[in-house]
Length: 87
Image 1: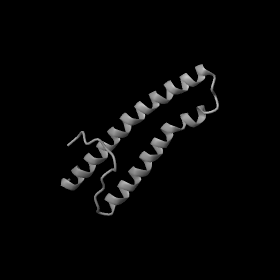
Image 2: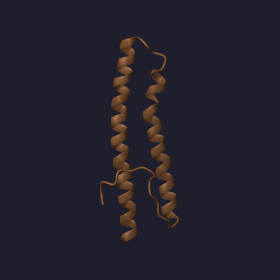
Image 3: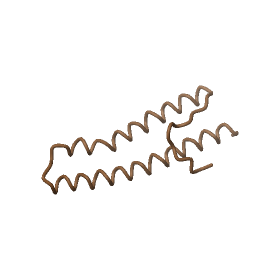
């Protein structure tokens, strides 16, 4: 299909890899923190802490839409923070 398609799809793949790694790590940290708070008898902040992975997911949706719109319009899009694992 072309060099532009390869470049943009590689960028999107790198972002999704970065997002997935971050989401898994953050979910584990939140689960451990919630477990520690429950063990300590603190229940008031559990809902707020549990919402943190959802914020990352919302960020993923927003950045993916921005990238798609930019590329659809003929431009190029680089995610602001992504591990460039795939070249």
